[in-house]
Amino acid sequence: MRVKNKRMKIARIEKDFSQEQLAETVGVTRQTIGMIEAGKFNPSLQLCIGICRALGKTLDELFWEEEEEE
Image 1 (cartoon, helix red, strand yellow):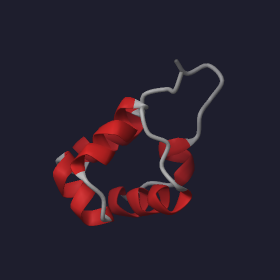
Image 2 (tube, rainbow, N blue to C red):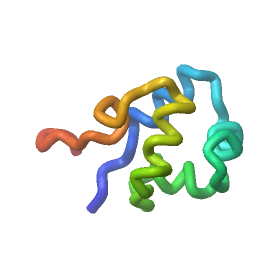
Image 3 (tube, rainbow, N blue to C red):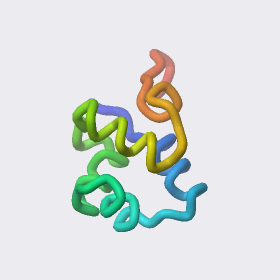
């Protein structure tokens, strides 16, 4: 079972981006962003980097999974 990406969602909201706006910025569909946030899609490294750039975060800040996280 994949962990929901709450950190990505929080960073997106802090930047005042809708899923649609973030999707347009990184070149994917809104559904893709929603699936990443829900933990139902594992993005490529290239997409992760694009999301990080758009949100002003590092890969570790958004995508590193700690053992304790549920």
